[in-house]
Length: 379
Image (cartoon, rainbow, N blue to C red):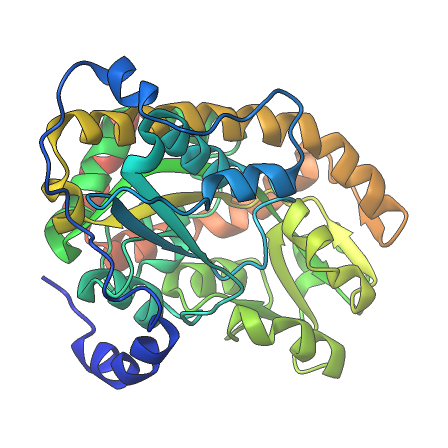
């Protein structure tokens, strides 16, 4: 099992101060459940009406419980709120479902805006060490802990939102979940789809691979992302997401790549002039939990968590599709967008494919081949 023990030990003293108000909370169920899930739902002392505002939903989710046998679930995120991007709304929807079904048997604590840190060491390591129970984490950022999801970082392997949702919902998604659990002791409760990754830069419009030459792009600390960007003609460099806006503002890098709603909500248009719809990677996300915590839940509560995940995964797709047109319309007012034709996009795909054999070796040929076999994806 891959563990980031050193990073965990370094951060423990800081984390204990941050959590002084909740470290003594009970995090294990001490009573057995009785009756079906409907009986669990009946234990809720609060309700949430239709048309509730984001503020009301969050207040409902985080309402304190007076139940002495309550389970405390500490959820952390690097984002400041769960009320804007579609996939973040999905995580909020998951917790709303839990609170609706479990009532005062659960108390959910928000630790947002990178309170617990923003790196894989801080988040995934914190989950392993059980200083937190649950977090959201992009599938592209697990690579330091496990290669479970690295096949999804091969550019143009999956080309549509629906194809990615289908892959994650099928056998390949379950296989990758198990790999993550075996490697890290962390359980992915559900997958989300964040969107198609697009390129922005401050130098020139990008319509062809030739336009990438000489540009320096920020990518995540992910070997496959670096190989992909370089195969498409640019220079790739790693910069932490929390430092990206400043790096773009100061010209440390010329450009970056992210889903459109991330580009809009992070206001990268303030420090970038051009955007191109390359759709080179469909990014997936996850709600991930300490598996020991999950296993300590009684079976009926586990069923509620699983049902909440299935509900939230579909919810994200509906929200994402409903919001994308508006996101692009808003971006058009802020940044010059080049909408690539299918033929133009195929040039980028052909360039990226030259790096696929090397990517396969980085991932591990046997594991990669098994994932794409289960996914029914050609290579």
